[in-house]
Length: 160
Image 1 (tube, rainbow, N blue to C red):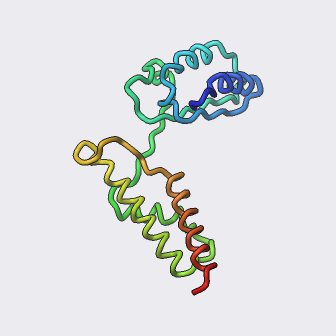
Image 2 (cartoon, one colour):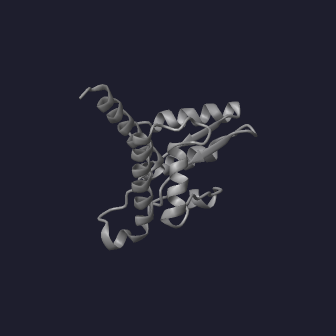
């Protein structure tokens, strides 16, 4: 959400409610003033029985409590400890069943996974050493992987 997509989101919700489809609105913490409009629109809907509205948000003080109370809430937390986090993260960058990348790429991906795991674990100590909250997400991990792959291809393409 954000960037003027509010009207499009409402239209999409209305259409999906009629057809019994699913809609996912992401990053609602960015548009907390608009959430009262969403809540009113949702109350006026007469959806098909298969309609589902998924909302994703980071915790936010101004998120309407009525919307929270009328929702089923699911939370996701990273596994505790660097080791568990590293194992989970490394599975994302090198899924089992894929051909193993060459040794250099594997080492780079391991370093990226290690960095990701440390950042995830470090979130526990935000008040003690970080200026603001930032979650190094799966999207950031995949972007880092793409950058490393591009740099590796570029360095292998250039001869000595």
